[in-house]
Image (cartoon, rainbow, N blue to C red):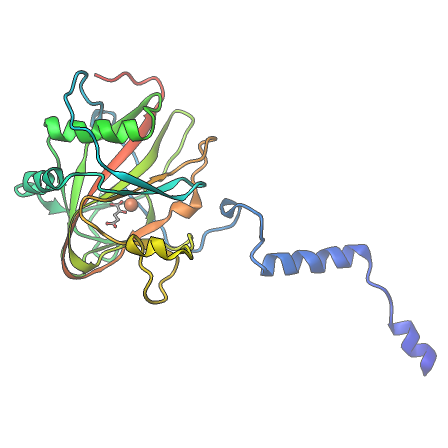
Length: 279
Ligand SMILES: O=C(O)CCC(=O)C(=O)O
Ligand SMILES: [Fe+2]
């Protein structure tokens, strides 16, 4: 009896121990590994995936632009995410809202490159903005903010208007990347924020502990990840790609439903296009 008990007991082999350790590591969420290694279970929708070359613009030389007065608050180093308080002046924000007034059209989404409307994914209106001096100064400010990256242009600016229940489901602002061409960064600018709800949420980025962030991010309630508050004139800036051109999975984000009032936003996307020459 005693000898049979001894037979059934044996030490685990190193291979078995390795396998058990690997299972525990995966169950713990693979600490230390970058998130892009892991398959993605969040439903993802494509933003406008390809910038058409003719939509790439560059501010004219010799512009006389007002000095900026914004304050930067670095939220994360990798990926680089910065909350920019007062990126636009009140006058600039009002001007963009006024310019949009006659141009609103239903927002669209892309599915495998095909454009359509789908309110379950994106419910808002958008307006293509003419490029007057104020707008070109904003383009210039956006490029200067990033240190005038080489071969990088601004996509023609679009505003978006969200009324009650307006939203934009989780998506990346990029769908394609190549050695020569990609949407390198995003500024999500809030032009008007007379609303409740409507924050910009990043489910894969955790909310900071320091209470100083509560002026810029939602600190009430148990929301997933971090949600930046819409505050007129302010912007959230982030890089979409690392230095090797690999998309950051952490940049998946959503425009949360507006629960009352109206939110008006502005996309400023920078596009890297190797070999392209500004007009
Ligand atoms: O409205 C927002 O907060 C996000 C909008 C957005 O992600 C987009 O337009 O690509
Ligand atoms: Fe987006």
